[in-house]
Image 1 (cartoon, rainbow, N blue to C red):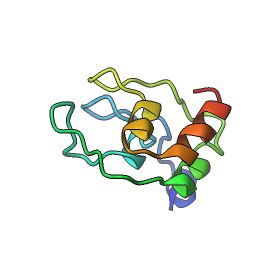
Image 2 (image 1 turned 90 degrees about the vertical axis):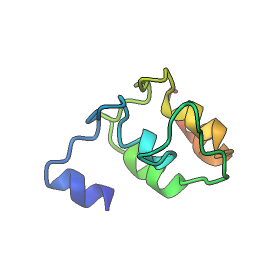
Image 3 (image 1 turned 135 degrees about the vertical axis):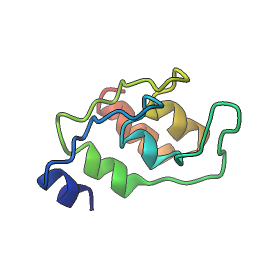
Length: 90
C-alpha cells in the first residue's frame, strides 16, 4: 500500500497538524496523544521496512509532543522495528 501511495505522489515525509509523518502513524493512531498513549504491543515491521526503503524517509521528525517514530516504537515494544530504525540511523 505504501508503494502504491508513493508511486502516485503521496509525500513520505508529509507532516500533519500533530507534527507526525506516516512513519509515526505506523505506531500511533490519529487520536493518540501524549496524555493518553497507546501502550499495547505491536511491531509493524513490514510497514517500517517498506517506508525506510525510501532514502527520503526522515527518521528524526519530532511530533508536537517531542517524540520521534523511535520513541513510539519503544512505547509499543516494537523491538524488531526499533532495531531496524536504529540500524538506519535513528
